[in-house]
Structure formats: C-alpha cells, structure tokens
Image (cartoon, rainbow, N blue to C red):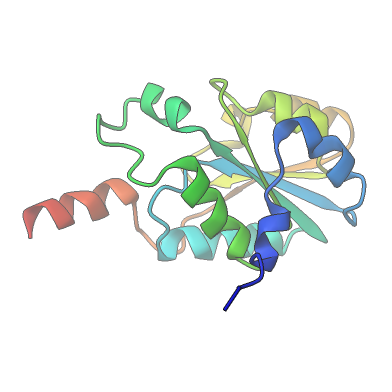
Length: 162
C-alpha cells in the first residue's frame, strides 16, 4: 500500500522560496524562531499563544550547525533540522516552517516583514532580534511570559539521570 505525502510537508519552505509563500498568507503575520529541539509543553503553550496574535504564523528554526554554535552541548540538537521541521509543521499553529543558519534570524524577518514578532519571556523586547525593524514598519513585538516552566535542557538532564 502506498501512503500519500503528509499534508504538513507542504508547510516546510526553504529560505529561497519563503517570500513567494509568505505572499499567500493572511495578515497579520506572526514570526517566531528557535531551536525547538525536543518539543515540550512549554513550547506548545508558547506557540499557541504566539499564533493567537495573528492570522498566520511562520516559525524559523535554527539549523543544526546554528544550534551547535549556541553552546547548548555537543549532543545538541538531539533531533536534526529535518525532524524538527516536520514536527513543527505538523502543529496547527505553524502555517510555514523555514530555517536559518546565521547567528540570528534577521534575514528571514526582513524577507517576511511580519506584523508581529514574538519570543518567549526570557527575551526582553529590546533584546529580540528584529524588534527595531518590525517596530519601524509599524508592527508589534511581544515577549510572552512563560506560563509553563519547562526546558529542553532540564528535560535532557532528567533523562540522563534515569
């Protein structure tokens, strides 16, 4: 028996194709980014809250090399970019999933020109990459407070001790 390609696969978009896909999304457009290595309750709560700020949302993932440069540990990411993108695209909150290899997602932000830029509560608005640009074109920037205290690092430490 042959199975159809999962419908969520069409929501994974290479950076080179991003602008064309963004043009089809309803506004206001939300943009967020991160590693999202081992998805947990804190992630999905945050992503749901971010998505509620607009009519569509783009999630930009750090590439594997980008995650490694962040110094999260030699064994990170646990899940490679292809797997993280598939999991993120399968969530209903993500309309498009893309990636960036640079130190920051500023190139993707400039390509998308989101109406709303969002990061988690550990990021003050003035430290969120792209905040000046988004505010400059009349958008909004939000730092969403953590509702559920979870972290991939803490989860991995717990697994290692079991």
